[in-house]
Length: 211
Ligand code: B1M
Image (cartoon, rainbow, N blue to C red; front, side, top):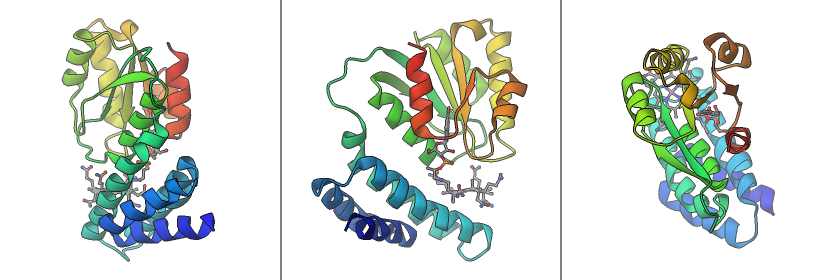
């Protein structure tokens, strides 16, 4: 039963059916399907199919965009189930997708999961310059900076942020976490990040441990 609904969600995501997907996701939640399964086995698995087809030239940017829009609509419905209600925030974190990079679905998931761990998140959005991150670190009491990058070209901007934090004399004020599909533990070590995590759930776990 729940596998069928997860396959349906994956299929609707691949077709970019934003209106239909919110109905099916809501129904799945009402029927007691765990939010984590809806996310991982429905939405993310559907997005991975689109990613492979995009790579193989079987679908193009417009199809990917409608799938991404469906993902964002479905995420709004899922959020209350992923974010535990009524937790008193233990502190603040900053999140963004780095300069040159417009991918925000993974970043938004990481944000949701961190919020679900009782941490307020300042979301700077996408294509964010190192200077903007430095300013926000200076003007907030955030203890963690989370940097997402989805392109092999833009992961280099994660290093630029760390370098800018050092130059501004605020590197020690925050822990820097990096992630995104092309990022690895060895890259994180090389650029001097405090943590690399492969997915949103582990990012939230590591982030929570800093408070
Ligand atoms: Co683009 N794209 N894209 N894309 N896109 C990829 C990333 C790509 C792998 C597709 C492919 O070729 N197979 C490829 C990158 C190749 C590379 O560099 N190695 C690619 C490319 C090439 C491009 C363009 C250059 C295409 C073009 O224009 N020719 C262009 C670049 C635009 C730009 O950013 N400047 C582009 C554009 C786009 C769209 C705008 C069409 C759209 C983005 C829409 C949006 O985000 N609002 C898009 C999409 C949707 C994808 C794919 C299909 C899906 C990405 C996604 O959302 N995945 C992607 C292929 C794929 O990944 N299968 C692809 C689902 C999401 C939940 O996963 O973001 O990986 P992800 O996040 C995960 C983890 O990585 C991790 O947690 C998340 C969930 O557990 N994580 C973190 C992420 N951030 C983290 C931070 C952390 C910790 C964990 O700590 C701080």
